[in-house]
Image (tube, rainbow, N blue to C red; front, top):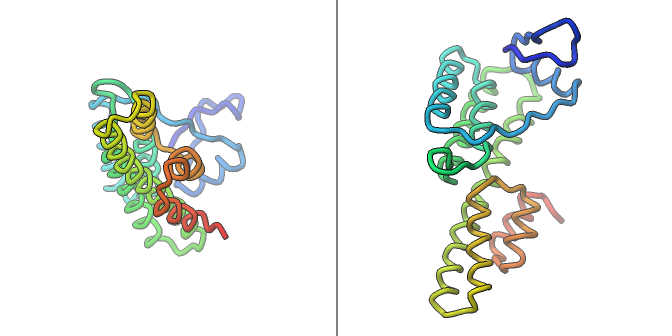
Length: 195
């Protein structure tokens, strides 16, 4: 894996032999990778092919990270749009790849990686459930003739849930609790191990 090197003057690229070396370097350098920009269908296909190449070379850690980045990419218009179901598929693929990587490793720190990816998938599943409930609530509010501002507020929340992946705090504070979806609130508290 080669990355541009801004931290090492005189070196155009940093070389990494494997996923763990890359991960350790990123922690030491304190580098957070930003989300990918909105991608058109051709770019997504190219990254899917790269994932398959990683998979064929037993580089499941890199394949997992790539799928995670695809799941978390920015939302775009037209052919650059990404649905929650597409995000779920990428996230589920990321979990499968990291689990495959974990079974091939003898180290204990892989459990943390698997937990991280699985938790990301669980949070996305909660977001999808909130999206479904909010869509139903917006439709019901419109059918009952509630004020247009209230219906618009619900529809705006539905649209926000489609555009990007929220963290658990946002899902609880901005969607679950205010709209009184108590079953999902309990699920979020359980996931956060809140006592």
